[in-house]
Length: 154
Image (cartoon, rainbow, N blue to C red; front, side, top):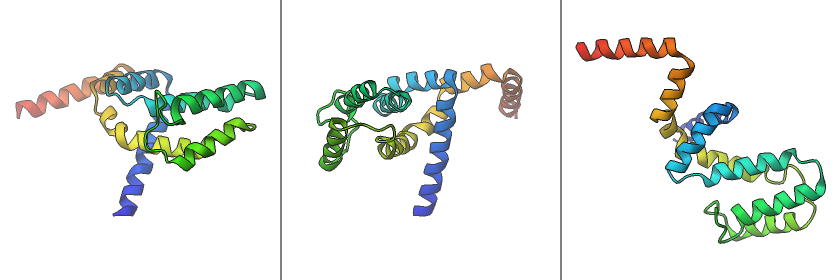
């Protein structure tokens, strides 16, 4: 059972990565998350990706502090949820020192796994996603409509 769960989670994370890689689809997904009150993990992902691209230490330190105070610190307005005290303390110390580009990587992987398992299946079945796919591949959408119409006639 655990193996099957891990396999399905990996598939969901890969689906999520595909959604995040498509700029238009990513915007639709973000709106879906807002509508379903599940935006915090996505926001963490966006801010960490900005952080990882920063080259200047001062900017990186400022962004690390923003991420910590917005998503990790106890009582943060967009808190990630079930982070234990040790994790929060670890990141507070890392932010106070010299933040390195990969400092959030392990937490980001956990967040993406949580985001994928909680939202990706619902999103892939949401009308906003199916409309986007229909817009991108109108010939497939038309074929699907014909198939659906035939199955209703049967």
